[in-house]
Length: 105
Image (tube, rainbow, N blue to C red; front, side, top):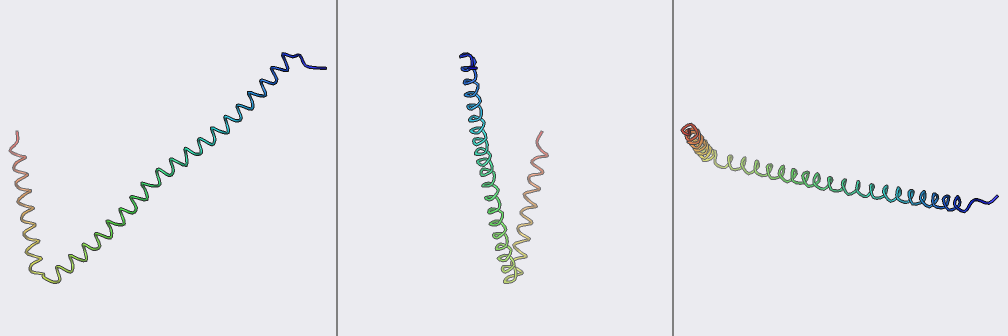
């Protein structure tokens, strides 16, 4: 028995709609996968940059420590005098800052 023409058209349209739906589902999955990969790459880059910056700071601090130790060994009296002057300056600035804050209304 042959199908009614209206039923055949409806079946064809249904099949077509199901095909479009599957195609859209596949494209949406690919788009979401691409977006997830982009987000992952965007988050990885700053983390790696922070890691590199941390390593650079660590190396610079190591060099500064070595330099300071060498400077102190070469002239211990001069180093003590510089440290005392720096401490006195810091104390004077702190005292000045505290008194200026307390004199405000």
